[in-house]
Length: 254
Image 1: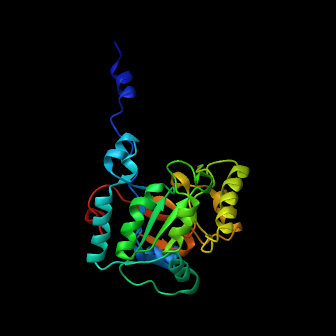
Image 2 (image 1 turned 90 degrees about the horizontal axis):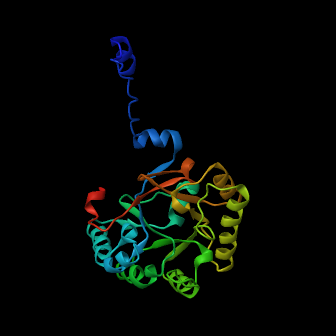
Image 3 (image 1 turned 180 degrees about the vertical axis):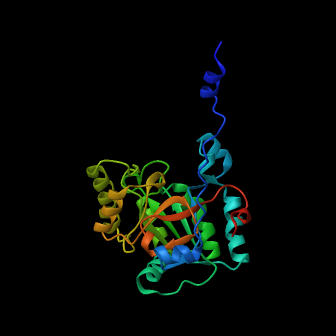
């Protein structure tokens, strides 16, 4: 049987002091550290499709139904939101051109064909701009956009951004990072779709070299999946977004 001293060693009477959760920075603090900053919620979608289709494909977690997507757009209209473009955000960072209050960005990741089939008609109905991040090597493959659809959508207020060539995450060797970003960069440029030079990290994260390489290619913005609503110039290659689910938009604080 262990002695009291041995028990005391096994079960110490004092607990280590817990580390306090860091307090989120205020807008003013972020502006002082990383500014100029703007409060600009950036909505992130993936699939817009019927939920029965999503269930068959095991895509429920990445899907918003067309019914809810229309509700989201109606909500933005009723609340008086102004949907802006990446070009306007770049103009704010580079030239100080003010973005109106109650502005918002709408983005889609991965370039799925249901964007063209289901989301685009609703965006057109409301006259809203949006941006689609495409892994260019997957275009023209089953389940993804066709280049002819990309070209058609680009003529109607939709911009396209670099999401790598084959949707590899950016925690890779330098050679792979360069190949993935540069191949998509070339394809988008050849299609006349790369004037704003905007990127989104597959799976939501990158590393210091991916940022360095994006800088080398003169990318103006890069988006993560990190949660946040304040976009700052000194963080322009690691910007946050708000991932939207298949529910009402009001709980997101908009």
